[in-house]
Figure 1 (cartoon, rainbow, N blue to C red):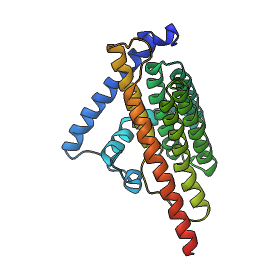
Figure 2 (tube, rainbow, N blue to C red):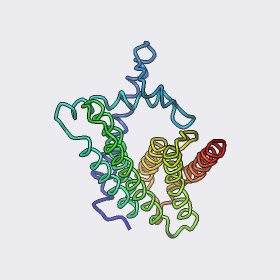
Figure 3 (cartoon, rainbow, N blue to C red):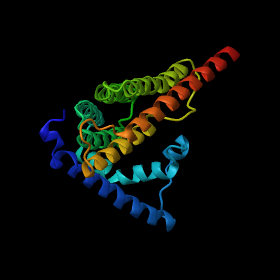
Figure 4 (tube, one colour):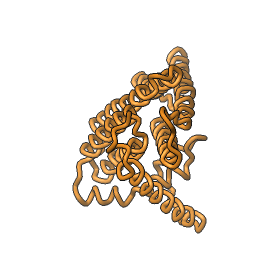
Length: 259
C-alpha cells in the first residue's frame, strides 16, 4: 500500500505536471526553431544516429533542452562524478517508490535521474574531464540504477505473475544489451546494432510511468492499479532488448570466428 505522503498531490502529481509543462513548452520552442532552420545538428547525435524508438530530432531536442543546466553545472564547478552519483540516488529512490506503488513520485524521480545521467558526460566533456574512469563509473551507476528500477516494478507486480516475469525479462534484456556490446568491444568487435539501448529504455519507462501516474491521478483505481502502459513498456523492453542482446552476441561470435 502506498504511504499517504507519497500519494499526496504535492509529491506525486505536482512535480509531474511541472515537468510535463516544461517539456511541452521546450518542445514547442524547439519545433519552431527547427522549422525556421535554426535547429542544432550535433556531431554526437550524427555519430550515434537515431532509431525507430528514438529519432535524431528527439535526441537533438534532449541535448538542446538541458544545455542551460549543463552550462550552469560547468560554471558552478560541479564534478561530473557528483552528477553520476545523484543519478544513482534518484534511480534507487524511484525503485523504492515503484515497489510501494507510488508511480507518480517514481515518474519524476526517473525523469530527474535520466537528466543527471545525460548531464554527467556532457559536463565531463565541457570541462575536459572525460576519462575512461569516468565512463566506467557511469556504466556501473547505470547498471545499479536500472536494477533498482526493474526490481521496483517486479516487487509491485509480485502478485501478478506475468507482470513479475515481464519485469525480470526486461531486466535481463537491459543487462544483455550492454554486456554483449562490452564483451564484443573487449574482443575488438563493435557490436552496436539493435534497439532498446539505455536512453531508449529510459524514455520508454519514463513516458509509460508518468502517463500512467497522471491517468491514475485523474481516475483513481479501486484497489490494485494495473498501470497497463507500464506493462506494455516492460513487454517491449523484454522482447526488443533480449533480441538486441542476442543479435550483438551472434554478430560478435561471427566476427571472431571469421578472424
